[in-house]
Image (cartoon, each protein chain N blue to C red):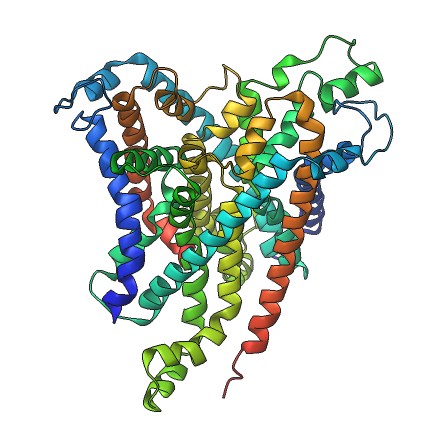
Length: 279
Length: 271
């Protein structure tokens, strides 16, 4: 009975999820190759990747951007989740829904909104011209097509989602522990630092990873609002598979490297994520 | 004394919460305002009310075709993902077997793959097998992405309902299929509807993976993405955006409220 139940879903993923990654691996070592190159095992592309300043530099740039976004978003989301879970408000599930609802709407359209807001002829700049705060024809150009724009939009897009795991971990916190702490003479600040914060840490770590993992390989947002300075590692992968001068071998190396880093992170922090997913 | 928050802290957090909600909804409201603005550029000052952009998008055949394509893909995806997800969830929640932890981790693993990596992987697979890119190749990819979400919705619900109800059905001579149809399925129906909606919206909105495996019939997100590069199309894209955002917000909130109500009604009164 069990093999019959699991056979189809596991088989589907084996064929359309695992096998494709295997093919990427084969391309990365040139066992498979795009004509006119001839196939033949070589680690050349891996060697070039590890010794290339360009690709690794771009990878670190993406990691840095993604780390900053994840940290800021968790910092903003924590007080929100804290308010919902521990303030005793009766409408907490409605407020939670209000917070999360934007996440459930179209990703591209939310990015589009910022394009409309931040552009040279966009809402912010024309508002500044109109009110005379800035002279017409002198827009703040750094708003759009910059690293700032990419990070702002990524933060905006992921913020609602991140509150959820933190909320879940704070919600399951036994409030009697806080009462006990206060009975024993702890101030609120001490109770927070010694009880609430450590106990909510799994949710915080999960939240952090839930933003970091999808954003570090992001290519859609940077290609829409990033310009050249917001160009990320994911864009590089797309370009290597693009129509101009495709280099599937190098592209496969870049893709597998990213996948490896994320798989390692997932395994190391699996218990945090699992605990969250189970609730 | 409240050990978690002082009265001042509570007030401060409430204000902060309000400000964040404003930050989250302001861009959506700005889109709404400019969708009615009588100017081909979304810029201040506002120059008058018009429904022109809505009429234009209704008359735009390419745009309507892309919405239709996305709806077909999302429908096929959600049926496929919910079917596979239900099989997997029943196995994970009801059966004991060796390697369950590994099976569960494997079934959830598409959650953490970067879409750019999955997109090119699928592209290479179809290239290797000589399968031309089409509507179906997008569906195949979207089922992989949505499957874990359906499992995350269905397993907790299955664990919530009392397995002895199913055992009673077996004792009374019902087979596996019959038990599922007349006992399990009605009890998990609200979760199945949620899973269906999640898979549908995930697929309808998905750009990254689709961009690698889409055929000649473009999906709505792919149409949007290319329209974003032509400023002249911006106002009508904003009008579509408003319609899609509103519909999805209403559907999501209504579905959540319905699910809560339905599950409460289904709750077996404790003996």
